[in-house]
Image 1 (tube, rainbow, N blue to C red):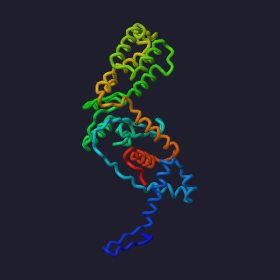
Image 2: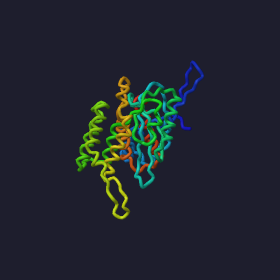
Image 3: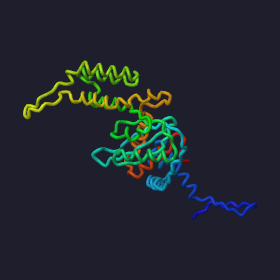
Image 4: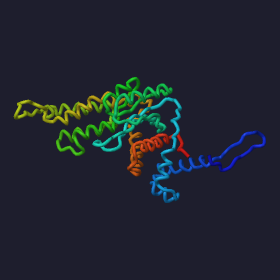
Length: 301
């Protein structure tokens, strides 16, 4: 091991060695921070330091990230997942549990596909650490509401509106579609009683239209003509019990959306795009660094 210098203290027999390896590690960690949080490319870092891109990349692979430190407390939890890559290739993603008040990522796991079991493991982990979960805000992934139903669950308003948009499109042509979109836009602006009244009035007004059926000429079988509209309404009715949880527990200030995580994912993907071409292992290290550097946790330096 190469040694820069040795410091002797006369009052004790302790000898401290400041090694080149320590200095090199610190320089690499600073470059790593500039690579991620400064959004600088390997080429830019190479030009600034006079070192080759290969040398910098090899040193990045040797960086060891610290474990997540926990401060158990009462939290409003937001959970969601985000995926990277194209669906027709090897897509993979990350599930994240976030304290929405302090914007701190508490738990995450890299996944190949989204499963309820991942969320169950995250919930168990936080509870065993001593966190008191006051509420959970989540999207419409099947089984999530049931996973967290030991405490108040809020269905994300943003995701509900996205679901409706998939069914009726952004610019619906049918009058019934236009009016349903207007009803959904009132989500979050009206109390639950009034929202339910508007939805009921809409269904009653368009009942005959929604019940129209088309006969298949070859088989003679009947099916609903406006299936997508009916599916949109069914989705809204199914999620209604959890769309106004924030209203039932108004003293808890439960978030109505997972936007805290959505914006965080957007930030992460901006950085990933800058460093496109990385292998999954390095992307996971990049993501872990960002996830660790939320709110309370300081950047590695």
